[in-house]
Image (cartoon, rainbow over the protein chains, first blue to last red):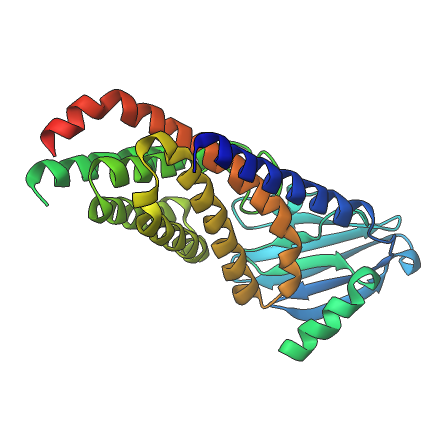
Length: 126
Length: 168
């Protein structure tokens, strides 16, 4: 295949995936129940609307502690001991955005209702 | 492998390691694990085309192991190895269909393969299939990053052709 052929193939793959990404981030339903997972297990399920004031949840993993912070109906990773701090830079969890992921400590914070079906499948798989 | 090849592989590994360290010192473009340019891959590509698959394998494996030491995270070694080995296998097996002039296309394929490998490793390690959510964005990032690193390697190789063709 010539250069032009490859450019067309990659450009179309790029556009398809970009549109796919926009669709899953833009059309996910607004949800308020979040789940905090570690090592694939549910640690806690929280309805953000019921939390009055502030709340902190501490998780410890292989690479130190993660502190989850909840206030005014929003949830974010306040601090993490891992070196890259991608989860802290993520900021508040948004219903239209991606889950907060800390790979070193295997922590995931995400909205629940939007993907109940996926959860059921995941549970069945192990 | 002759002495020249061994030495050049070692130099390329050192360059790749420096590229890795500089890149990891930069703030991430997008706060998603796995979205990065992967500058170190330029040197693996160069080794593959100028020196052959054995040198490329050596450059990749040594760089990845030493990078884990510099990054101080054993878990990142697992992710980099899965992605790196898968993408290298893909490049070695498809290399004969891609002359240096189309190296960038092979690099795009291998970058996408690298990200798919890492994503799979993440799904297995965290046992959370929901991470597959990131699949489309990692394909996008792989295509862009692969094209950039592939073009770098391609331009250097085309300019140095007269040197490595004569010597190896």
